[in-house]
Amino acid sequence: MTSTTHTATNTDVDALVIGAGFSGLALLHHLREIGLKTLVVDGEDGIGGTWHVNRYPGVRTDSEYSYYSFSFSKEVREEWTWTHRYPAGAEVLSYLNFVADRLDLRKDIRLETRVDSAVYDEQLNTWTVHLAGGGTITTKYLISGMGVLSQAIYPDIPGIESFAGEKYHTAHWPRSGVDLSGKRVGLIGLGASGIQIVPEIAPEVGEFFVFQRTPNFIVETNNDAVTPEEMAYVRENYDAIYEKAASHPFGVAMEPAQFSALEVTPEERQRIFESKWNEGGFHFANECFNDLATNHEASELASEFIRSKIREIVKDPETAELLSPRTYSFNGKRVPTGHGYYNAFNLEHVHLIDTASVPITEVTEKGLKVGDTEYELDVIIFATGFDAMTGTLTNIDIVGRGGVTLREKWQTEGLRSNLGINAHGFPNFFMSLGPQTPYSNLIVPIQLGAQWLQSALKWAEENGIEFFEATPESEDWWVEETERAGKATVMYSEGKKAKAWFLGENVPGKAEEFQVYMGGGQVYQQYCREVAENGYSSLLAHVPASVNA
Image (cartoon, rainbow, N blue to C red; front, side, top):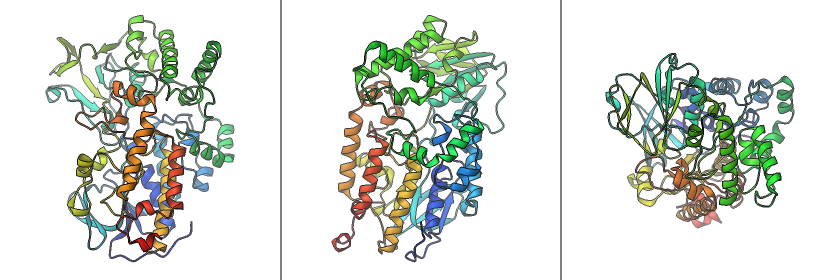
């Protein structure tokens, strides 16, 4: 992408990106390519975003290495070597640091720089970003790269502060680590983080109490080392692998299933289920049948297969039954991968406590009470997840036209955006992985989104467009399309039962709305291409009709 001469503004920078994770690095690289003076700010003391912050035992990707990486840099592709099929958090963090160094990005990244608020000036058409501790930065373009799973939440349980032992949230795990050996440990929360931490710490703790409200359908897998031959193959076929992932509904380099689970014989269905279960991870969710996310009967067939696997692995029948979801079916919640999760419950000192039938009533000085039963603990771990998609955006004041914050807009109007990229009332403000972007392996839409924004801003600069702003009509359409796509899946009714985060159900008081687009990543990308082909008209609110012509 060649650079372009941009419209001069009296600002400190042309583009300010908040967040130095995957999104921030991709945006910085692509916006610098078109000549925009770009700065990335991040409140942490290192780059990496969620991979810099999340250091709990067992943290790793749910996606395989070959498509959990950028494809746009030949130098990075040729020089970086992955070591495991599902890279651990430390390896992903090393990769991001390598990207920053190899592409010379650090000179335009300012760490330990936390944003308090950002205010749009309607007269000057600029954003003023106010920093914690004082200071401001002015910019023409403001872009959120703050991530979708960054705003940690704690459970609303009385007495948390009274606990005399150690307390940790997986999203705020001490960088120096935690010695859990021989201790009585309680875990609250069994989303992806909790599922990863269970098998990792189970062998070392003294007694392990896992407090479960809602079990998950976990697709177990293995984490083989990457051979030199496999890495060589990936380097030789990077473009094809990435294109395959970009064309897949879930953003993975897999073959989309061709048949319904209902149109094959029971014997063939069992064979396919077994084959993909043995292949591991998302292969089961994505390559078995084409209706496991859209047809309740098909979803239930997959559910019962996984329940049978739980019964095979877990020796105690009562524990196996507690681990088997019954209130919703497969794909009703985001499907996590497991690395020995079920087998951990065969250890005699690992205890599964059902808090659906008898809930946690309070945290005491000594531990946790479930009903009238008190479990004495040395350590409590909260793996209670995040205010996904919108949490980081509403946690700071992003102030648009008329002094209205983005938080206020979504509170009064409901969750509205144009393709999750921008919102009416907030000129020249953009979001990487904003709400209502695809339910996907996130690295694919991060890269494609950065490349789309690069082209869009290059076009705006070359055509004298002073600001992009979503039209109300584009928001109306995208809300309708997001709702249509979501309601066509089992994730809607089943996700409501399971209190799924992609409906906002995991956050008390949060409106029930589709946080992600479930119509497929490849469909979403086609919509983005059509916006560009139509001259970005859906981003030209308040622009004279002659400009749109």
